[in-house]
Length: 389
Image 1 (cartoon, rainbow, N blue to C red):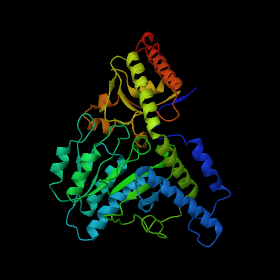
Image 2 (cartoon, helix red, strand yellow):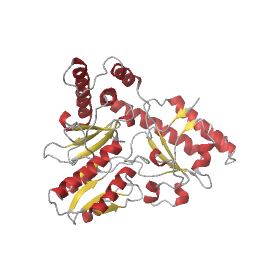
Image 3 (spheres, rainbow, N blue to C red):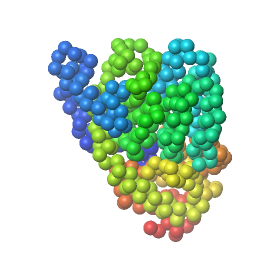
Image 4 (cartoon, helix red, strand yellow):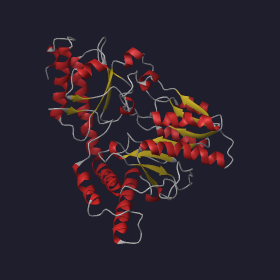
C-alpha cells in the first residue's frame, strides 16, 4: 500500500468537501453572475456563503475576499497590482522587498517589476530559514512600495515572525503582503498588520484551481487588475467564478476552522514520531530549518552522505515524498530555498521534504519508516537492522 507524505505539495480533497461540491456540477449549475433567474441566484448565494467561510477562517470581512485561480494568481495580483497602483498615483518610491526563500511566483513577480522602473530587493535568510528583522529594518530606510514575506515556507515549513516583521513594513509606509497558502488551515492566521494575503484551497483539503486574495478594506488597499474582462470581484479579477470550487473552498475553510487545534496536535505528534523513527534508521540525519517555528506536519531532512535524495526516492516508489517545491520539481537542480539557507548544492541534493496531513495515520508513519529502511537496505546504505520499530 502506498503512503502519502507530500501534503505541502497538495492535500487530498476531504470527502466532506467533495460531497458539498457535487450539486454545483449538476443541479445547481447556474452562472453566479446571471442575476435574472433562480439558477443564477442559487449559484451566487453559494459563492457568497463560500466567501463568508473563507473570511471567517482568516478573521476578515467577506467583502475583503477576492477569489482567484489559486495562490500564484493571488500573489501576482497582490504584488503587481499594488505596486502599479501606487506608481500610477504618483508615489515616488520604487523599492520592492521580498525574501530569498519565497515561492517562485513571488520572486518572479518582484523581479518582473524591475522592467517597470522598480528596484527589487531580495533579502537573505539566516541558516534556520528565518529573516533577521534587522535586515528588513535596514532595507526599509529606503522608501518602499511593497514588502512580501510568506507566513510559512513551502519547502521547510519554517514560520516567519510576521507579528514583528509586518508592523515594520507598514510603519515605513510600505504595503504589506504575505503568501499564507501553507499556513492557512494549519495554524491560526493573523491579518492585523497585513494589507494583502494570498490563499489556496488545495493546501487545506479543498479543490485545486481556486484561491483567494485578502484585500484590506480599512485603510483601503487599491490594486490595478492583472487583466480586463467583465469586472467581477469588484473589478479586481474578471471572469466567471467557479461556483463548485468556491463551495469546496468554503467548506474546507469551515472544517479547518473547526478542527484546526486537534489536527495540529495530532500531525505534530505523528511528525515527531516519523522524525524519531527515521533518525534511528539514519543516525546522521539532520533537520533543515528552525525546529521550533515550523508547521506542525512539516519535515525537511538532510540525509547522511553519500546518500542522495533522488536515489532514495527512486528506491521507494510506494512512499510519496519530494525534494522540494512541487512547482519546481521538473528542474533537477538544488533547492534554491535550501541553498539560500546556506546549504551547499551537495547538501541540498541530500534533502527530502516530508509532510504529515489530516489523513495520515499512525500505521502510515510506521509503514513509511519501514519503506525507508527497505530502501536503505536495497541501496546498501546499511543492513537495516537499526530500522526495527
